[in-house]
Image (spheres, rainbow, N blue to C red):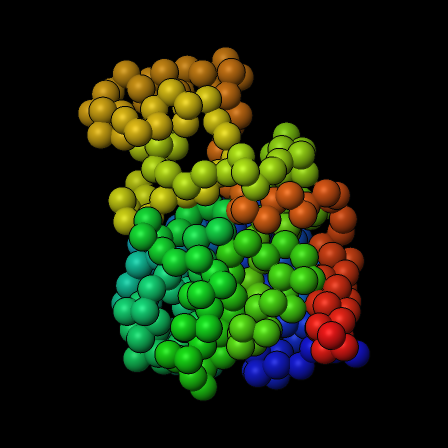
Length: 320
């Protein structure tokens, strides 16, 4: 039995489960595996860097004949990146964080499904006005970046569902097993966008140390903040913060962000600590549901497991 929703019908996928287009780690092999498993694999192109995009798009396009997509950080791209991605004929293109207005034209003309991630009501209205086919409602429980002043997934998803109807909504943030997928459907969403859980899969483009940290991590050890963006000089706009597992530089600079931004020595210290192996090569982006991640399966098997868990959870809820 498959969970049929407006999203699965629109995209032609078996399960209402979508791989979050995590920059760098959601590569071609992972996206292809998710699509092969019946979900929608999304390539995490991030800033649209040409070499990475071309390499991973080729892997993905040759790795599956099922629908797949590509996601971009809206604040970090130019229209050329979108046009290059469309040359590989993705079924969907997703924009997150920033105004997607300058980039939606090529997507709409191509016939690809336009997916826009939102973090507040204004962004949701804007997404619909731009012609979004699917809206992703991201709650603050999500790993990685999100709105500094966002909302929790539980109250935010039904708000967006009502606001953008009849456009289908995907729930994102704090979903790491089939019970979370079932909860998203119960809130009125047409599916779930999942990130942290897919970081710990055999196909993810992550260092083994990051996988180990996620499997061993606990939600209570995650926190949102801007310290690691500032010290890395990452360029993320200040209206977005990131949820990560613990890090020595969080302990050193928490609550002193303005001082950190004004101290040129901090960046040098960070780079020196990286070179000496004192700190991990990248922050460990992880959501509050990281406790539920306990193994490293193949992504296609994980999609099937999530779908079966969701069906079981919905069935048990109905019997009660």
